Image 1 (cartoon, helix red, strand yellow):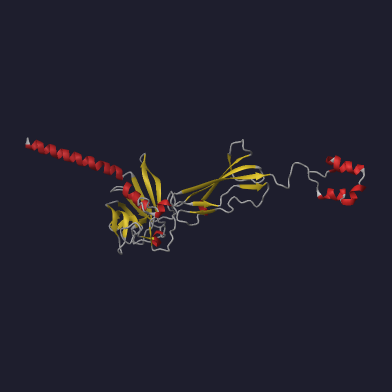
Image 2 (spheres, rainbow, N blue to C red):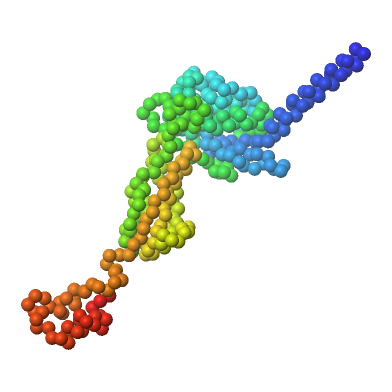
Length: 330
């Protein structure tokens, strides 16, 4: 009976170990990460229907000592000491002293990130580790378990999803918060958003060749930098207030009607701002359809002042009573 009990215990422990280990293997095989050292870009692939598909791209900073090869993720740390008395958030070991981690901090304090180092993302800047934003390093820390395959290589193209852009922080101060670190409640960037100014209701004369849909528009991202290149503009048109708006390509100043113009920005942090205004094209003041304006040549032919009493009835009839024949009216 003792042998049987021991055997049962051994089988149970093996089964329990298998059940704990099996999900880890399955989870580890869900993602594969490729790091393009030359382009400082990380691409995450997810296994779908037996094939890996690119699902995320991160901007990063590698270094001259970043190794080329295939590795597996190992242990992880919320905070971990780096070189030169610096610290990183959401650190995950790739191999040896090479880690995924945030941009470095002077100490374990989210307010003490080196602002100038953050602005180096997208370029070689590390001692060999893979620097990321807090948002991206945290995603790997939370979603890619031990054993996840890592491939580091050099390539001329960033990857199938391209190389993401990132904001540049003001460097007047040595330290800053990571603007992507929304998990720290005191981060001032949590409450900042992009802005669009100068968008307002307009009335445009038909045929106005000087009209510019971007005139007076100022766009800034969440850290207050010019972001007009990220501006998206969409236009809808209707000829009158009773007709529903329909999408069109642009404001056509030759066509009278109402143009609903929407200005939108999605900045490098993924934050959005949107403003919608109406630009109305009206008939030109110099192009009246009423036909009640006498041209200057007609007035000169009619005469003015004391000459008016010399005008005979035939002239009066031609120019005043039957203007259609005279050609004086438009």
